[in-house]
Image (cartoon, rainbow, N blue to C red; front, side, top):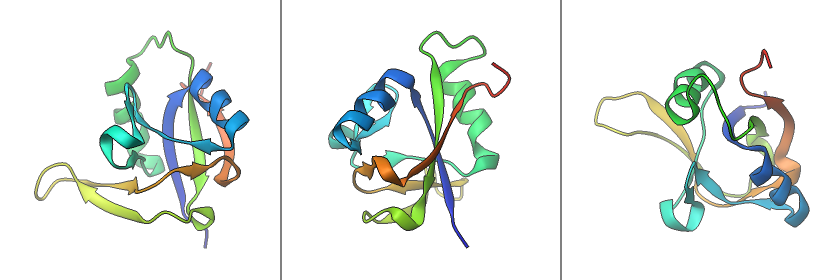
Length: 110
């Protein structure tokens, strides 16, 4: 079974990653080098994360990267921000562009 990880980012950042072949943005305003990992979500976790990062009227053209975890060479760890909190997938290395199997607009109704 394929595990899909979801990551929200700006379309321009994804387009740049497609050109270089590797994605290295951890979260809005922070790189993998700064954060140490790339923040991801499972499908049911994405809406609150997207709301927190972009609100209801995004101006930066956010997209959702759907990542096939089986195509990653970097380790994926499920970790909580606070002890006992909900665990989110963190990718501890760059994401190859070919691990992204789908790119969807956010919100999906756009």
